[in-house]
Image: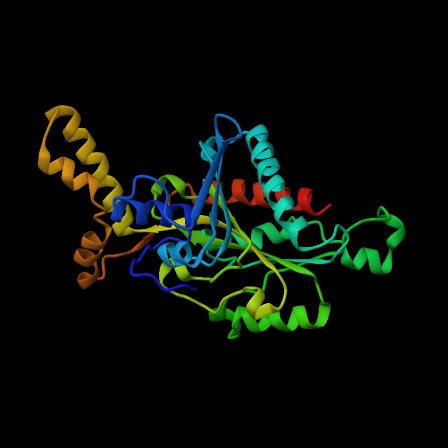
Length: 316
């Protein structure tokens, strides 16, 4: 992972890019980064962040590669149609990434990270339950599948606190013994925006560092550590208290501005990123909690449906 002078406290490349631009008062684009945006429909928007150079990588603390963010509005009230459209948008982006790294019949391993017993961290295990695994059927009952079906296997390896084994160590053993050509890893992420909780999906072709967004960094899962391409699918399910406070402060300032019409101090306060100052005020009393919304059960269920469908559509 690239070192950076900023404590972004988010796993999303798009948010890191926005934070860096705001902190450095950059109006155009960061040198070494390219961004392309697309509106799928009124509720679904896609942003593709390409980190092209070492300068771009160091600016946002992300390796050179592609980071795609799919934002989905009103997921708490999502209909079956909304979930289907979102799954198709994910499938399109994922399929494009997979095609760059392996052939249509190459074996793929799908990995669901997280703790199944903690709702905000249960996304990965929930997705794994709905993945269409085919490897064993191809081996033992091939007559029941179309001739060109891709071998797919899936696993949820648990977390270090319950297994006593680093996730990398588990996956390295599986990859070395089963020989997939590519790994897809699903994990819960941290965000710097309350609006993105369980409403955004990030795809990255550079792998993932589990726990990085909440300060509990584990070993990287990437081509360097596993020996094959790793595509990460992450969804923010938590923010920390400083993020919520900063967002609420922005909303409060906006309200005051609308009433007061003009105030130089409030204008300056809103233009600044106040996250670090707020965090430093909270940390001494151990108040910088990690927070998730009360609707997290429904949000995770909806997002797990979106991700599982998107993966299944992309793989077969």
